[in-house]
Amino acid sequence: MSTKAEQAIAFHDKGYNCAQAVACSFCKEFGVDEEEMFRIAEGFGLGMGMMEVCGALSGMMMIIGLQNSVGNLDKGKATKGDTYKKVREYAAKFKEQNGSYLCKELKGVETGKVLRSCPDCIRDAVALTEKYLAAQKDSSPSVK
Image (cartoon, rainbow, N blue to C red; front, top):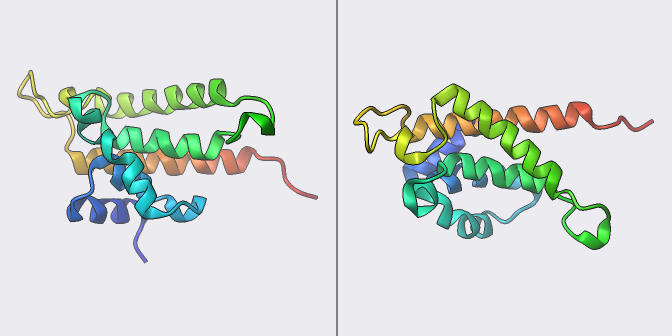
């Protein structure tokens, strides 16, 4: 059985963009159809197509939203503020590890110095996503 990171890298090797590779590797845990997630994440690759926020990081943000969002404002209190806080926290962890969260900086477009390869960004985003999900599981109240 392969790890999440290995699964994400296999997706990327197959042609998925960085956002798709990360987000699709978590579909089973959330009961999300992989083809649908592939389509949702497509515009987030290559730093949202503009070399802005790293696609792998965008994939991680999608999973944080899936886990944290109430999913419908009629179901209760809005969760977006809390989701934004969690996304910022994990984006900061990614930046601390890699020196940036911007695709063009990670790829060294302007400097010629590559800070992190796409496969390494994918591995880091998957690891941070797993860390986030484990922390949420550990902090949820136990059922008696």
